[in-house]
Image (tube, rainbow, N blue to C red; front, side, top):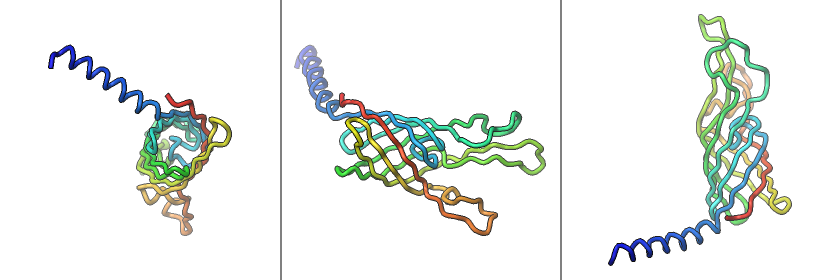
Length: 179
């Protein structure tokens, strides 16, 4: 086969395959409140690209609460990130895995006068439901567990009564038309 024909056929195949693939791609932006997973913090914004039943998401979030002291050691920013993927069913139910912020703590280390700010990162495994609310606006709720056992509880280990708290959150998003 001549090189010009090969290039032309390859180019045409790429155009046809991309048209078929990209006609099924849907992208969206979202915001929400939760326990870090899918949001990068307690509150966050993100984006999702969905192809058929598989989606990839990335988000940036903020750890709300008390202000960090002016002088402290450890992490300097209250902003964090999260990225992951979800596998959707045709009914809107999904299972997902994410890597990102699981928790944060401000404490003093032994022999140190200033406070230390530390973020905990890890994997979280979630299940949830996504539903279109109105036209391109959707709502999403999820619940799950993290890969770090201590982050699945409300209070640290030195308290007698620790309450179980799964990863959970509510998201509202806007889905753009498919490409």
